[in-house]
Amino acid sequence: MKIITLVEARSVTGPIKPLLHLAAIESSANKTHHDWQRICVTTTRDPDLGITHTNSLLDAAKKVALPIILIREKRLFDFSVIRQLGSILTDEQPDIVETHDFKSHLLLLLCKRLTRHHKSFRWIAFHHGYTRMSWRVYFYQQLDRISLRYANTVVTLCKPFVSVIQRRGVRSDRIRVITNCIEPLPPPHAVTLDTLRQDLAIHDEMILLVVGRLSPEKGHADLFAALRTLLQDNPALRWRLLVVGDGGERERLQRLAAPLKNRITFIGHQTDTWPYYCVADLFVLSSLSEGSPLVILEAMAAGLPIVATIVGGVPELLTDNETALLTPPADPQALARAIAILLTNPAVRQSLGAAARSASESHTPLKYATAVHALYADPL
Image (cartoon, rainbow, N blue to C red):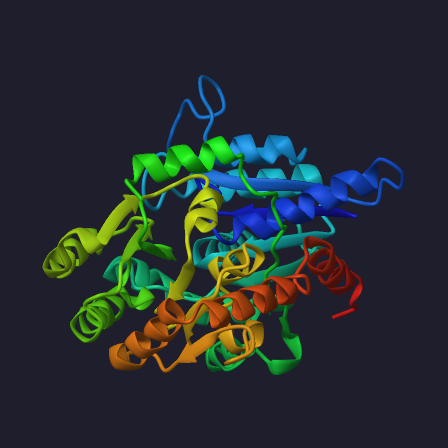
């Protein structure tokens, strides 16, 4: 079976990680069965990418033997991209074409409509949710109302997203839910962790961790409000928040964090976030909307106690008072109370962390691959 996977990425983002796990499993299986041939296609405006230098996406794909074809894009609305994609599909003759996120969906739809080729493949569109990083991005996301209904199958991350897709014109019998996966990693070397603690000047305070894009739907402002309440109600508690990630909200969030002085450290984007999970004492997700958040699965695999808002697919991964403490979204007071419980109760932290680590074992890359491969075999 030949599969073309069309993505829009320059780095190993959330949607890319499960794809890399899937490619690694297929590459291993091909050593004995030769069942899968997967090619990844992505656009780039960097004319020298892949010639004089690479990026983290190309490097990660090489490690799992995933070939990548680069479509050279000169500008916004460069219609030569559609012609290049059509040529690739004509040359490769795939059985399945997967698209990830709104731009890829739209490119494939335009390619199918504006060229004469590749009528026989099956189109599987992977829906990863929506963010309001900018009004332009929000506008482009609305184009899914046109493109998604033409896919043979739409895969989404969690049950709450099913109704979102249905409202965009996709028939319910064409929708499938496949949850994200996590590959447990060994703990970083002790020297790595000691160096990180020294670099961050971590001493005897409890470390709270939040990982993700700095954009409005992640609810960082609510978290900072909760921490102000926590500081006011529990002034003796020693804690510090590490904010790993970057985005358009950074300057605004830094202004909001100013009253908390040295209690919040902005780390910025990190290619490897695993060491930060391993120096943290608890993980916080304050999002206003989510799909099946990989950061939750990563925190679970690290055995961290978790405070998370009840949004999207979070309740499909975590159970309140069993594997995490769950709070309503946009409720800083509830968030503050839950964080205080974990900071002041070592036994609760240990119990929730151990339960979360155990629950993460239900979301392995092999189980994800099994679900995706079963979808390929589905006659839909």
